[in-house]
Image (cartoon, rainbow, N blue to C red):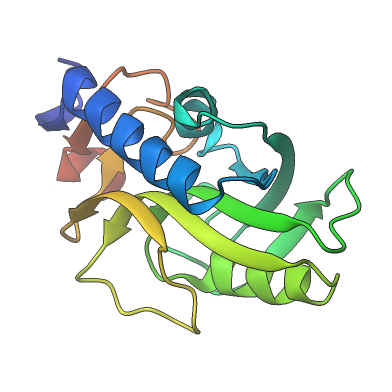
Amino acid sequence: MHKDVERILFTEEQLSEAVKTVGKKITEDYAGKTPLLVGILKGSVVFMTDLMRAIDLECEIDFMVAKSYGSSAKSTGNVKILKDLDTDISEKDIILVEDILDTARTLTAVKKYLLGKNPASVRICALLDKVTAEKAGDAKADYKCFDVENEFLVGYGLDYAESYRNLPYIGVLKHEVYEK
């Protein structure tokens, strides 16, 4: 375990099983369709890589960069789309893939933006849903691996100031690391 991690919340094995379960559900729900998985960079990349391999049907991928955190531990409240899609999404079934659904400001803004591009559908798949966080807008996880409490989590793509993304598990970051 990394020295800055207070405790491991989800092991590699737990993550793998949860992702397979969500992938199976998406496979069932999108049978006969070709969903477009849209990863919200950077946090979703590890989860999305495993998720697309767990989906047993043809799918496409694309990425967006939308930020509301910067390098601090708290959301700024302002969402900026820094990288748009390369794909025309008109009439496509979109699955937004996010690492953690916290305040939902980012996904609310991204979903609203994408709905303006005439997709067939837009659903949200989150690795983690912070159930104790006050949500903004109508963004909710249609698919999720785990519900979590209001703790600062790192690993498996989740970061603090661009560090800890490569941890193979999800852990709780020690308070003294981000409350400097």
